[in-house]
Image: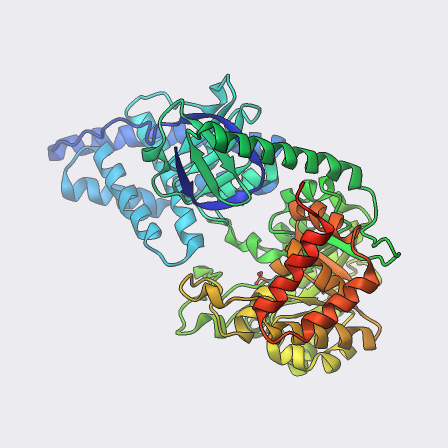
Length: 579
Ligand code: PEP
Ligand code: MG
């Protein structure tokens, strides 16, 4: 038995048999020298392969649009752009002429160079994009070498898929009825595989580095997609434990359906709202499945991350309208783009700074490019008639910045009116509180905000000076640090003093240990990964509000995060004794 640890990207516990999908279904690439007069013949073969690949990808694009989503169709759209990119082709032509080697080798060599460059990037998003280059060149090579592409759609038995990497086209075409779990060497939270696994509800652990080497076909596996654990050939005792945990998970999922339509209300009648966070429109379906009352954070910047695609007004409009329509009258909070920091978009020139986390990101970026900002606001306004939209601005540091953002919002509305664009009468505009200076001036910001949404991921990062992506200092990222608790109190009280709602969309909102504390501090809206909602709701329905308030007071009196932690753990064991 051995245990591998990776990144849990899609929750759920699954037990099953490993199917190790060959790392590379393209055989060894032949390499041989060619003569000058053979260049044209080699080139012709490549053009034929390009033609076939374009045909295939176009049909995958249509299938994605029909069966999955516009966003997934866009991924294949990006592959088509790559296939039709004259630069890509001329790079191959130049190499073919200068190196005088066979075309398969040239294609393979160029794609290897490109993917390695991307994989070496410090930016997780760019690393994840290497998979798109790999997808396109594999397709070309398969046509050049006349090998049939093994399709995961041919799976006929239940398996846990173990792969080095999955191409977006594999995920789309695989037999989703049969793939019970995904275990992958590559990938992070923003990779397409992670996003699709979550969207399809398949437990998945990614970023395991060498799972395909450690696991062989037919091995018994346990995958815990919430904690990022993969156990290979577990012994009876361990298997029993996981079977029990899987049973509990299923039981909880069933209870979840019983809870789905019940309010998030304490036994003594205090009601709060549970919303979900999304990154892509297709997640809205899952949001409804888990009984979210709305979307508390739609990270709109993900629209700008689709390879080869700009997010023009039309594309943004379509995405927003789709989410709004799916959510009906439930509120959808679109956060204006938060690029920069660790979310680098090279096309925008972000990421070229010494301290990107303290640099040109989020609202600072939008305010310095007002036309781009207005494009987004117009797209939101146009979509607003499709449902119940709210907007909020990320990384506001003080009132001047908020006033400036509101100024552009009003300009966008005036422009729409002038152009006779119909939009919703009243759209709430909120402020994200995720910088200590905003927290400390929350009483001022509340005068110009319809609601607050606390971004605890950044608030923690900036309050404790802990880079949220740096594992060396991760131990310091303590959300129960007394400084955090005091800031939360200031923010929530400032909102209530002005009669506006205090929401939270950082990870802390979905942390079950924090639920009773946040409830006691008076938080009105919790927004989290949809799959975290049931557990948080269950806790709220068992926590009495007066008791929670007393507990929050006690926590605020603690001098260390360790004491707060202990206090909350004791509360949990008292209210949810182990069965
Ligand atoms: C946060 O900072 O808590 C937040 C919700 O925003 P993001 O994680 O996208 O920075
Ligand atoms: Mg943030």
